[in-house]
Length: 97
View 1: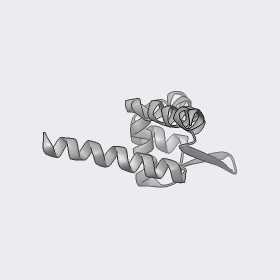
View 2 (view 1 turned 90 degrees about the vertical axis):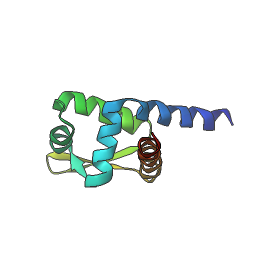
View 3 (view 1 turned 180 degrees about the vertical axis):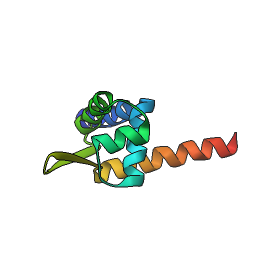
View 4 (view 1 turned 135 degrees about the vertical axis):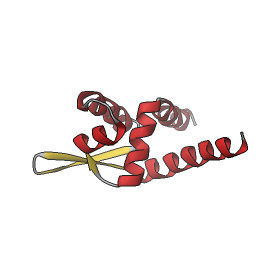
């Protein structure tokens, strides 16, 4: 039970940062993206984007694979579910407000 709570806390912490949530949203929309594309979509420097992608990967919300010289990032199944729920809840809050 404690391990499950730790995993849930890690995911919640990862998505609590606005930049990481924007990155996760970009991956939800774009599917698989390289750091340069994510940086362009989110509007942050590549080094900052890489940092946030590492945080999302540590929380097991993002997976990456090498494609030649590029590293492609995408949401994991867990990431897809959690990001979808968080974004849907936030849209619901805006509609109700």
